Amino acid sequence: MVDRCVCHQVMLSEVRDRVAALRLAGVGDEDRLVETLADELGCTTGCGMCEPYVRLTIRTGRTGFDHREAIVRAVLAEG
Ligand code: FES
Image 1: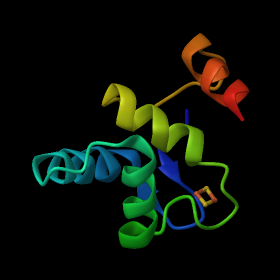
Image 2: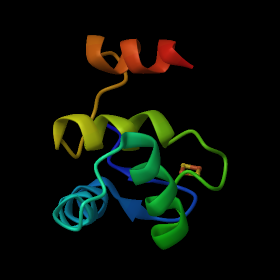
Image 3: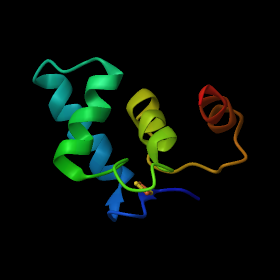
Image 4: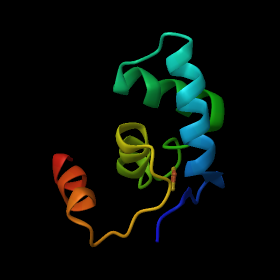
């Protein structure tokens, strides 16, 4: 189960909560959200392996993913 950015120990639940606040502040674009989360929390700025999961959290609000799930495989295939 993937539930965090391992490099920076940022939980996806923290990502979800920050995304909610950013959306209330008017930040809605997914790429801009990822950039802001990177600046504020550090997630995606190390090895980058968490980025698909951060994007899935942004898209779904979920905070845990099994890498075998179809939705995860689809996002991973986006590159
Ligand atoms: S796991 Fe998030 S940057 Fe490495």
